[in-house]
Image (tube, rainbow, N blue to C red; front, side, top):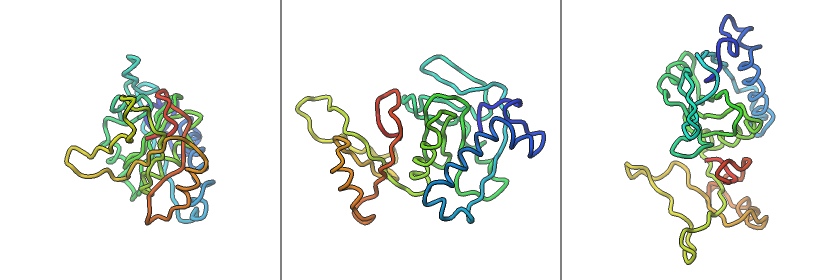
Length: 219
């Protein structure tokens, strides 16, 4: 967790951490994962570790609002100029702290109630009411390599009808997961996507509540 003070994430002992505000939040998220498939079916093969790292200040940076917090991993909103895309500026420190035990996925919880999330080696989310759904959605990217299903955004040119291109990384490598672009949430479109086999497409139909940019899905 990031942005939890000593009072919110006590590391005095295991029981203190487990019953702290951060420990209870982590337990709630763990239970949400174990209640969802396919994790529920393999619950006896999953292990969860709560790593407490108290911060000097509570919360997360919000550059667009001029808010800065002194936190352990330097968690922030507005990554790549997208308000709801949250991340940590000290990812190597997070990897070092997690290296005490073998792991497949790091989940970082930022102590702020505004909606936000991001997948990747360090899956990042917040303490918002949407956090359980965000976590399950982002695990689809991080562990399953699934793609997003986005609504088609209005083109800048009214005569332009093609969907926006998928931009590769600076190195020229293609994105790890393709972005599935749709013009609407029409049920027939969604049914058509869900009927495809993995060989035809890699698609995630999980969506999160719209963020500040009115996008229906998280990155």
